[in-house]
Every structure is written in C-alpha cells, then in structure tokens.
Image (cartoon, rainbow, N blue to C red; front, side):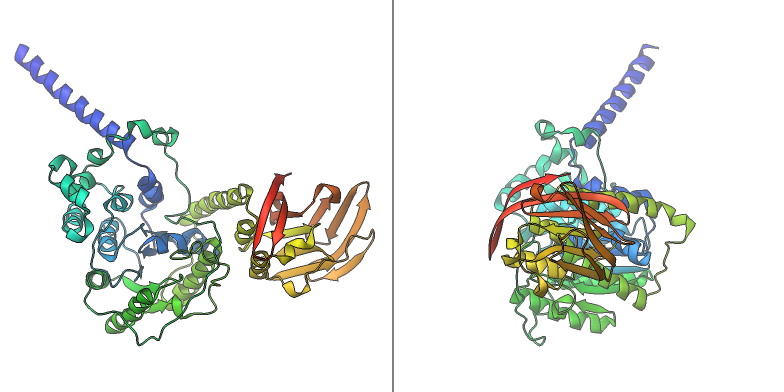
Length: 490
C-alpha cells in the first residue's frame, strides 16, 4: 500500500510539474506570434495564403480582400523571413490547410543565409505546435553558420541555450521574462488583421529603376528554397503566384527582382514585379520608411490590385454571400473598429490624411488657416485622396471627399450665410445659426462649425452615416515641414 501511495504521489508530482512548466511556458512566451496566428488556427480554411518577409506583412491586408472581393486569405509573412524560413513556415502552415493559391514574395531571392536573426524566427514559428515539420524546420534553419552571431554560436555550445532548443521549447528562451510580463501576457488579445500589420507613417521617396536585363546570379540559397516551395505546392495541387512587392528598392534588390522572371518562366507561373509599375503606388505618398516598407495607403493599393489579379487569373470563389463564412463579416466589423481607432488616436496631420485613403468613408474638411496649402506633403496626401489641389488657395473653405476620391468637391468663398452651390455630391448650402456655421450637402452629410474654435483645420469622418472622428489641428507651416501645435477632438 505504501509503495502504491508513493508511486501515486510521484505520478501526481510529475503531472503537476509538467502542468506548471506548461503554464509558465505559455505565460512567459511573447504573444506576438500567437496574436498573429490566433485566427489562423481558429478558422483553418483559406483559399489564398501570402508568404514572405515583413514586406508581405505590411503590404497585403486579407480583410480588405474580403471586403472588396470576398477572398478568404491569410497573411503568413514574417519579419526577416528569408526564403528558407518562408519555406518552413509554409510547410508548417500546410499541415493545417490546403489553399487554392499560395502567393510567394521573392524578396531576399539572392541571399544565402537561412535565418539571419534567430529571435525573429520565434515570431513565425512559436505558434505552431511541436511536429515533425517544426523539428525539421528548426534543425535546417539552425544549420546555418551565416545565421549565427559569435555570441549566439557561443551560447549554442550550451544545450540549455541552443537556438534549436529554444525554438522547439519556448520556455528555454522566455523563462527569464518574468520582470517583463504585462497585462496582455495574462489575457492575450488578438486583432482581426488576419496576419497583417498596418504601418502608419509617411516618407517621400523615389525609385531609380534599372534595366530588366540586369539580374542577380542564379543558384542562391533563397532561390533553392523558392523552387522547393513551387515544386511542393505543385505536388499538392496548389497553384503558385510570385510577387516582388514595391518599395524604394536598391539596385541589388532590383537585380533579384529581375532574376525572379527566369524562375517564373521556367515553372510557367505568374510573376508580378511591382517595381515595374508606375500606376499602383505613389512613392511620394505610400512609403512607411525610406528603405523597405509600405504604409497603409500603399498597402491598400497593392492589396486591391492583387485581389483583382487573383480573381481574374485563378478560380478563387467570392464567399461574401456564403452563409458558412458569415463570421468573416463579423470579423470585418471588428476590423473596421480597428481602422477607426487608428484615426481616433492619430495626432499627426500628414499621417491622418494618409489613413483617409480608403473606400467606404466620407470626409468633410473645414479650413480656417489656408496656410496649410503651402506644405507639399499635405498637398500630396490630398491629391492621393483625389483632390485637385490646383484649385486650393486662400479662399478655400471646405474640401469634401466621398469614397476614396471617387467624388471630391472644393468650396471656395463659402462662408456667406445662405450661399448655395450644386456639387457632384448634391446641393450644398451654408447658413449661420448663432455662432455656428452649418454646411449641408443634400442627401450626403452636414457639418456644423464655430469658426472661432477652429484656428487651423477641422476634419469630420464618417462611414456611411456612422460618425467616426472629428479632429481639429492647429499648426505652423513651412513648405517642407508642418508642425502640429495642438490637436483636439469633439
């Protein structure tokens, strides 16, 4: 009896120890990977997967594809996911889903490293449960001398700190995070971005194109793993599309983009090199940074273009009217709330105007200080919204924008009580009541302002007839710089 009790006690102790380790492992692990893939594991049903680096994360918005085309997709891009890492992410993803199309971005095609930043591999792999493919991934990616710093190589000599162990058992890497734990570690949250990560900033740039005949050499490690992905998808009956997403690319990057043409032609698969297109993004308005990524405006343009291409070139069903996918519409409403929050929390006027570049919103702008029209960045963003800025001057009182610039109206000298004007949006009329001035556009929107309370500019935003935000910016202006001095919201 005593032996049985001791044995039972040992078993209970082992179970409790394992349970405690699992709990502490789940608690201390960083949540960025689980946040990214939470919806992926919930749904496990996608027609299109997007694979690649942070270029993919920042440039392709699955929820916008759903809204515009009814495409059910997921963004599986990962920060610093060179093509070998992308290959293994795809292998792990395909353990759970079989899409109709896999879209692979060819950035880093001419690199020979597999996983240059081990910490970034956690973002892409931590969410996937231990499996044969995960073990293969870790063993292959860590067999990469070029991917280890001297410090990492020294740590690898200690099995308890080896990169392979930390990727297979998260606790080995995250066990020391106790002093970093925050509220979200105890109650993880997830968004409805479906793996995408919008970037909010504006940098003006320019792409200096090279001839298509200039290419990188064949046979780099990146190309080897790209070929593996193409061939594996073919064996599984999955179609492949290759891309090279737009950014302010160096000559070396453009050479590898040109090299991808040969790979695509060899396998007879579509390849879209966005660097060769002049009419998709604007390098003056759509860059998040000067070296690599798109902002929200650029990403929405790329997403819309890719969606149209997928619908025209592949047999991708529109599932917006399929009752089995009604939860996607529910997710989209949550996603809209996220987009609204971006606007409601943005205090930079150029970034704010950039965020307005989307469908399904109406914008009413009242301008008290027309000095703002001296700033080039502001004018570029207004042009990005479809506004003809050649008509903006010291007499401009209102700018009205409906559905991403499909209809825009500029009202000059429009503060006289009782003044009316026929516009593309409806009959506009302004009248005064007390200290307020009310602009009403018949059948569209109305705006009531107290001019003395708007030293600079006021922007009202609606989705349909649902109010989103009312923000007032005060500023000082130079031709190449605008400095916001005060922001307030009603």
